[in-house]
Length: 64
Image (cartoon, rainbow, N blue to C red; front, side, top):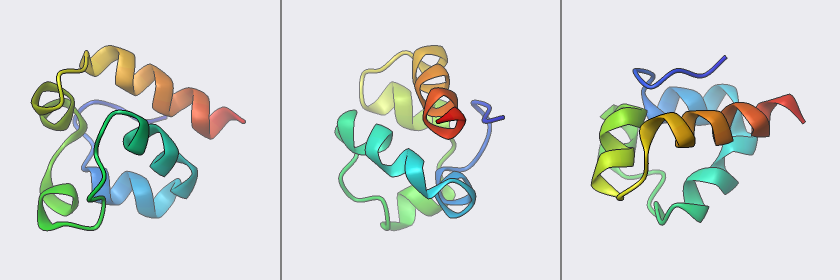
């Protein structure tokens, strides 16, 4: 299960299928230093997304 406090880079390593969700929110530099160190909640806020909604979308992606 993915949570808001998880680092994006860790999520991508463990669940590569989540890349599509991140890309759909406008995060196109998934390999940049920010993505490696930034948590999901911070990234959601920066990109104008609701963190809870983003986490729900990410968890749906890993359930498939």
